[in-house]
Structure formats: C-alpha cells, structure tokens
Image 1 (cartoon, rainbow, N blue to C red):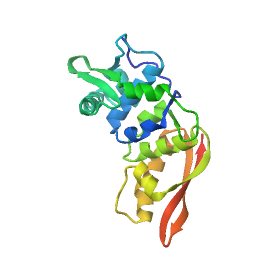
Image 2: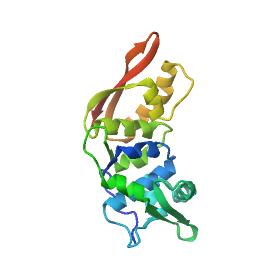
Image 3: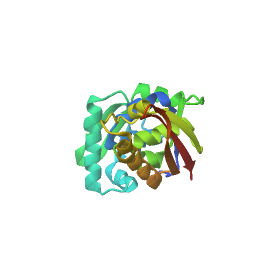
Amino acid sequence: TVTVKNIKPGKIIKYNSKLNESLNKLHVSARRVFFICLYLYFNGRYNSDGSILIRADKYAEFIGIDRTMAYKQMKDAADYFSSNIKLISLCDYIKNEGLLRVALSTETINFISAVDGRKNQTTVVLYQSAVKLSGRYSWNLYQLIKSRLLDKSGAFSIKLDELMIELNSRVNLEFKDYKKSVIGRSIDEIVEKTEIKSIKCVNAERQGRRVSKVRFEIEMR
C-alpha cells in the first residue's frame, strides 16, 4: 500500500507547461490531491495497477489542517475529478477507510514524462508551495512566475490582458484596484508561503492612459 508520508518539503516537481492551463482551473482541494499524486508517481510510489492511495491523516499532517477538513477536501477533490477526468482518470473516496484511490490520466503521464527544457516549455515548482497556496489567484500567479523563470531570480513583462487570462481574473476593475486586490493579495501569500522572497509588479507600458503591460521582478530565497 502506498500512502503519503515522509514527503520532503523541498521536493521539486517538473512538468510540461502545456499542463498549466488545466492546473489553473483546479480548486484548492483538487490541486492538492493532484500534486500529492505527482510527488508519489515521480518517486515510484504507486501500486501495480497504477493507483495511488492517499490517507486522510497524512494528508492533514502535511497540509497543516485537521482531519475533519482533510476528509472534506478529499471528498471535494473526488467529486471534482469524477466529472473532470483530463488530469486524473480515477479518484474514488473510500469514506469508511478515510482513503482516496487515485490514478493519473494518460495525458498527465505524457506531459510529466516529456519535459522540454526550452524556455516557457517547462514549469518547475516546489511541491510544498503547490499544496500550501490557497488564495483565489495566488497559485496561478505562482505558476506563471515559475514557468517564466523556472527556479531563478529575474524579471519578465506580460501584457495585462494576457495576465488576466493566466490568472483567470477577468474582472471589471480599474488597474489600481486590480493591482491591489488581485495581484497584491496574491503576491503577499506567495511571499509568505513559497520559495519566492520578493515580487515587485511595476507598470511597464501604457496605451493612452491605460496600463497595457506590467513587469514582474522576482527574487528567490
């Protein structure tokens, strides 16, 4: 039986950036289950039929939540993946045993097995960061940064419209309010919970009076 235990917080997870759009759509519980599965799969900790078992007590221990919340999140993930099988082809919640039985989809296995080292083709994240972030837009911004810079400090610019698509944040706000409520709150959580030490978001370009492009300046710990 394969269960979640002794997971190293600094474990690096690499995958083809073609997965990013699908991962941006996952709610917190589903994302946590998905990355636990990736970690165990990369370490060969799956059963002969390809399935992975996730125990509620170990899930709760690593995420830092109580067991009651762990049961709820595991059930929520199972409900989500029952009708969204692109990333995970099997996700059964075994209530009386406090277990999830999960199998990665063929598409996911292909994307994590065929990692392309070229710029913007590979995303490199820390396992701990992937499961700790819970803000509405924090994960999407974190993943964007890590796909652009991998594991290095640096900077990149992005059109504001493209950023809104990446963050799934098409909201009717003035830029100053968007920067505060969407970008700012996400930055605060990322800096608090991940390997990224600081993030600066500055206006990079305007079209008339409207900000059309922003620049992110990143420093890793």
